[in-house]
Structure formats: C-alpha cells, structure tokens
Amino acid sequence: MKLSERLRITTDPEQCGGRPCIRGMRIRVTDVIDLLASGISFKEILEEMPDLDSEDIVACLRFASHKIDPPVIRLTDHPIITV
Image (cartoon, rainbow, N blue to C red; front, side, top):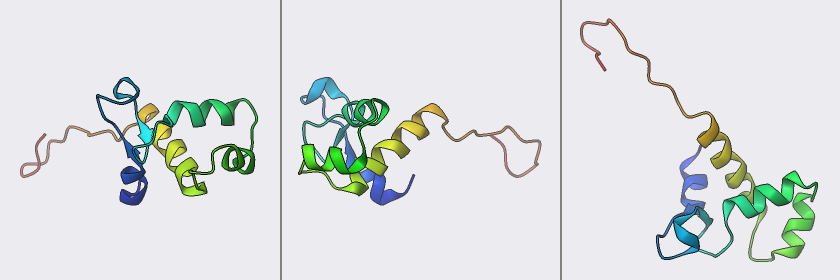
C-alpha cells in the first residue's frame, strides 16, 4: 500500500467507533467496500458521495487487501539478520 493511499485512511477513537474512515470524514472503509460488493460502480459511488474521489475508493480496496493479506516476516538463519 502506497504512502499516499495510507494517508487517505484515518482512524480516530472519537469518530465512527475508531473504525477506519476516509480522510477524516465519517465515511467508513467498510461503507465503500460494501457498496462495491453490492455491485455499485465507482462512478455511482462518486455520484452518491461527492466528497470522495476515485483514489479514495482504490485506497479502501488496498487497505482491505492489506488487512486480509498482511506482509509476512520470515524467520531466517542468516548470521547477521535475525528476527
């Protein structure tokens, strides 16, 4: 996930129960993912939520993907690099 995408996803314990939102707005990542899952297109989401842009939707998808499949740190026997 690119830094620019990471900056689009924010969390605040005082907002939406601390759930990940888009750029500090009260639009949760799960709201966007659920809309996409129900078959609504990018264009329709952007029409329905004019405060969003297409990069916000892509950031939501990448955020969800990263949560499902986080990077794996492998243990190594390398004498210098140990985890």
